[in-house]
Length: 213
Image 1 (spheres, helix red, strand yellow):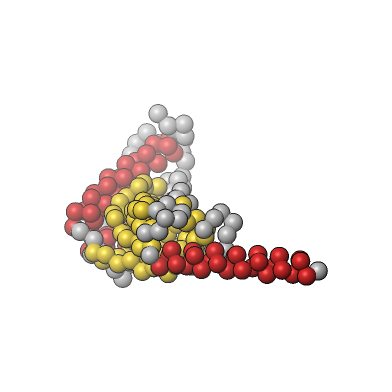
Image 2: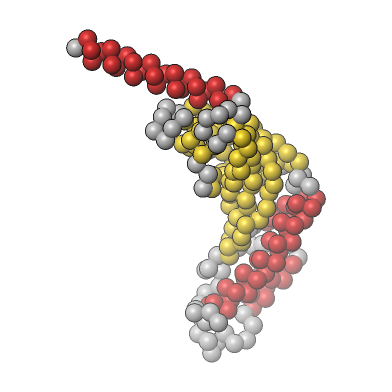
């Protein structure tokens, strides 16, 4: 009985020490913003009802109206979503590798919108500088016309790490803020505009010929 008790005490002590070690490493770990870019644009498949080939050879008035409204800065209903990639870097100043067990954060673009972000792929923070990529979905509604005015964003959240895949986790709160350059935002908007127009036309063609070309 005593031996079992001592074993439990030792295990608890080891777990505590590992947790302290992880917390110590976290104190010397920093997260920084690298870049923001557009990954893809997805247009809602149900924007235009499917029609037979014979009745769809002429330009679809819905497609024409949607494109004309978009050119005038009008979106009457959500067109789809734009996937944004945010590149971060995490510098682990220790000699130990950290396992990322969870990542919960939100990105705020000025006062326009706040969106949840999720971590892509990365599960380890090795010693040194690590590349991290997070993503979010921006709704293609009237707010996209305000994107060119965005000049500041921040990511606020919690990342939980451990010293091994099954170890006790330690949370790290982070708050990253950065200005966005004209070049970055103009590049995103140019791609969004082109992708939306192409996507709307492709959806219309898909409604005529479900199998595509």
